[in-house]
Image (cartoon, rainbow, N blue to C red; front, top):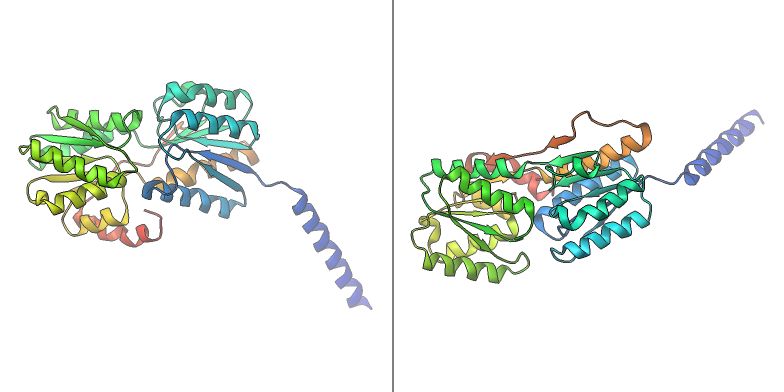
Length: 313
């Protein structure tokens, strides 16, 4: 009888705890990114956000326009604000296009953290913190490394012209190289077009001996084109950001370097920061948390191959 009574009490306590937990609405955080989760770079960032949600028991919704579309992105931010989330994470590739929507979120009392792009404008928009890398210095670093490899004339291939962060990478690259060069615009969702564009460009500019791409979506088709035309023997080739194919090319000595900004952390950390801000009012003292840049070369690529296969690097 005594044991039965104790079991009943335990059952009632468990039921009460379960009812209380069910009644509590989990923290909901919306991420609005200019990059699609299907992109090899952004899929890793999304993995980071999903892992943070799993660890912290919160809900994360990832939203992005189908292409690089600032009008659509601003609409997605407005829709997120209207849904009254507990926190909002945004990228800021274009302050002019997105500032009104972001400031509406801030005025509505929604805590906002930016990631990846917008480190130079986040504070002016009332954003709590930014997680990412400073793009211009990263570009300067790429240019200096190319110069040390003997590059005298280079091209910067930009898959999202108008994205302030990518524009800053190209500018920094040429400033670091100390030589002006061409920016070759391509479309991120058109690998065939990218291959054709770099092939035609190199045929018209045979003295170019350095090629920089700004992400794996451009790096992979450029690598394919250079391999097919024997260009890898004539140029030094580097890229921003990692993917399994980029790491394989680095390991094989087909590429000179890749700049790693650890985008997994760019997805992970904003969720952690907003969750702790919502729960405890805690926030880091620094308003910018840098996740890059770091250089990956042939000597270090093998160390991160396995993590890239897991969707972490």
